[in-house]
Length: 146
Image (cartoon, rainbow, N blue to C red):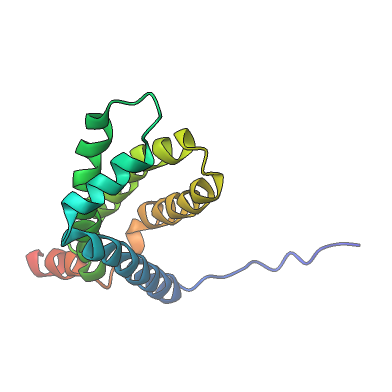
């Protein structure tokens, strides 16, 4: 049996639209994560410190990163939604996943670690497909400059 050798053709306009929709839905997800936490950062930090109680990790190593989590989520999410400084927002969000992944693995919360891996895959797709970021403020600014 021979497989068909018909090439799969992906239209650029469909890739641009798919990229834009993924960026929007992921930006909304990230923004809302930050939005629901930003109003009570001290409470969020306290909840994170309590999660790691009993582990041999100094409290400040939990509290300091936890303070910045809602801020990074909110800002990166908004930037991804509007498509402004998109690459930087994606890198910031992706970078945020490093300490989050380390933390959930320390807690041995493998279901959460799996969920976070999905976030990392989406960040990978968004970063590697950045050339399709044409429906965005970034693209508008680029064309306006030229």
